[in-house]
Image 1: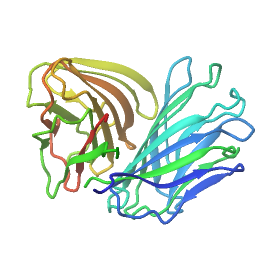
Image 2: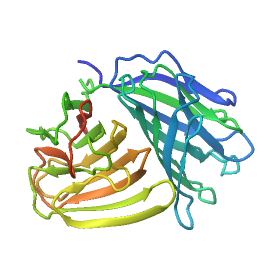
Image 3: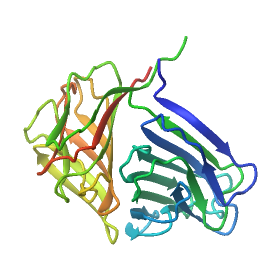
Image 4: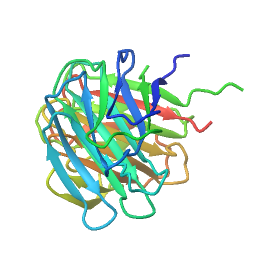
Length: 169
Length: 166
């Protein structure tokens, strides 16, 4: 019986890293699902980005954000990556990591690539965060590599990244 | 005992031509939850995506959402609808650029009203998270996805998965 929810690759950081890349992603699935558990190594929260195939062009998004108090906010951007969250603050309670899910349908197809993300931090203190993002890479190329970037500080040691393939048949 | 598959593709439809609706029928009751993944667009930009269960067009649907359109966040609701709305700002654009993810819990029991959790995303317009309710105790055996007007673009994909608790 075919497996429809398959782990493609798992990564756990043994040292802080500014980026994490999955390469040679097979085209044999329908969708990609990425689960991450991340924290900043130092110096505040991570502005987390997502790039495909090493490209730094044609990204856009609409973000919905709540910080645990006050009014929720929304933002849009056209940047060099999909800026899907700003979280994992290193001043959070020790051992507290942020959890994130990124879903990419039809990653191997010839249409533009849309992304749905959900990211949360709960800290029993300040720095609670929830981010919901609609991202788009306006490129028809099949996604064969995927890079998560942390624009200072780095992803901390013990941050984890699990990439799954979802197959519709 | 070997584990069975718990994330099972039940049906998928890639549109070869523009179509006003997509229906999954004869849905097996042997799973616990359903997940629908839709990657779509509409021939006229700005259309909503909706669904109905078991062909019910009565005023039995309601929907509460949080949303961001890129400049402001808000929350709202719609009650006594004749369909389940599946977006607020994450509506369809004129290209295949919308990702819709729907989780439908305990869809096959015959004792409770049916709820969904959804994410509706279009980078050009906005992102939504929502809860929906269908006020019926019937087991869900069919789901129809439709647009407010216009048609889904050719190449749009609709896939339904079954999640089994055991």
